[in-house]
Length: 180
Image (spheres, rainbow, N blue to C red):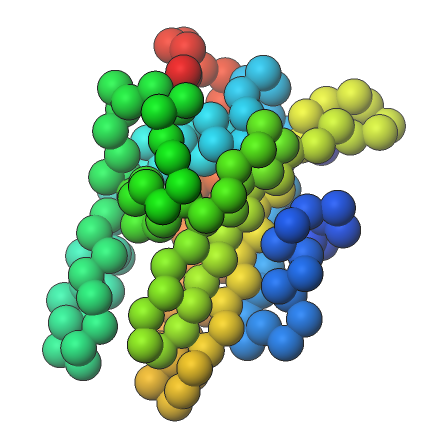
């Protein structure tokens, strides 16, 4: 596994694997961890803290358009309190655009629910059997509720396939500063 995110399969052992069946959209991206000691939540915090500026511009456009049809403003990917220790995050805390659902050392589940769809995100860390490297896989699962959800996904799905690996690239970098 190299430092460039690659399209992958949903890890069979992950909790999110059970949500893939019947999903309107799902994908997974994997990359070797630059900081293998970080937990799954630590990997997420590292990635979202380094969100490319253009991704937040896209989120700003999304939030303005969503407001016109009565959907909620999600904020920006990088709206993360960088001084908050990882251990202080609790179930249902907001982290960036997501809500913390479940958290173990090897997998963090985050999500968001709205009237048009439910999105669930997993950050799963595992040891690659052949190399012993820590591989981080981000899986996104979307279940739509109505026509608005299907229409919403028309531009979002192709953009997600660009955004997800772009955000995940930060996981491959070695940090100069420790994450908590």
